[in-house]
Length: 328
Image (cartoon, rainbow, N blue to C red; front, side):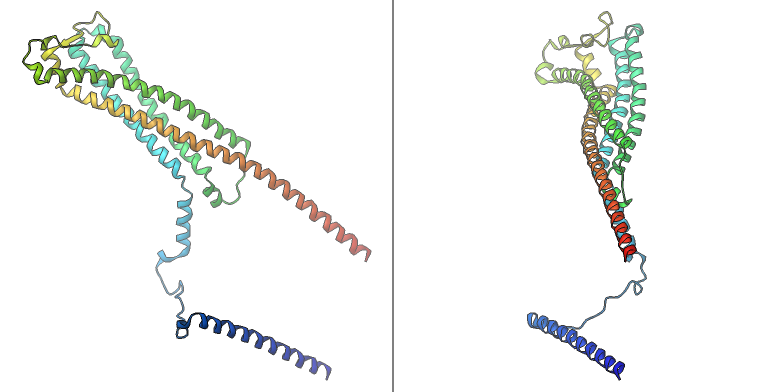
């Protein structure tokens, strides 16, 4: 009899608990209908499951993967890399063609003797080889900095799980900061140097505009308006003719070599300026990444110490429990 009575008591207890749950649910539903009267006639329509839709693009796994991939892109490093590639390409490509056009103008008009501008031709040829090296180096360096931006972005660290910094990684980041700073200072000099031929060609072009002006066309002093290229120091003072005046100078300004070289030097100077901006951008990114790695190393050391202390505490608790169990 006693087990039967206990079973009946348990059933009554379960029924009373179910009634309480049901009554509470009914109260919540009634409260919801009281607050929102228009919801009484609302019918629930189940949302179709993924099995009802056979489209693979609606899979949440693909969407989450795309979001993670987009979150792992270092957009600041990507913009700096594109700007750096564009600036270096403009400087190297336009500068190479403009230097070749400058040599052609000098040989045809300002220095007819080859020995007078032989040193200048060698220097220009050397600068063209240097341009090839600059283009190759910055192509590799930009890719390396972009990869470094990927591996130091916090989003990439979250994608790959636990991330631990090392002293070697921090030293490499610091080395990139120093190297980018040195390259930025060097490109400031390149930017200033690339403005010299722009200034020279601008003076020649402005002189030609003076010759073409209506107020000077009717005067006899047109042939006295000259440009002496020797004053810029690119050819020696004994070079002949070295100075071009009047209509001959106007003919030089109308040639394709002068027009192309002048505008290409302007574009090359702009490319050097864009490269300087890109390197400054890279310097800011690398500095912030290095600071992040430094803070991450401190946090890593703190977590290691904390985990060690928790492990020691668990060992002490387990030993104490074993001792109590042995006494009992």
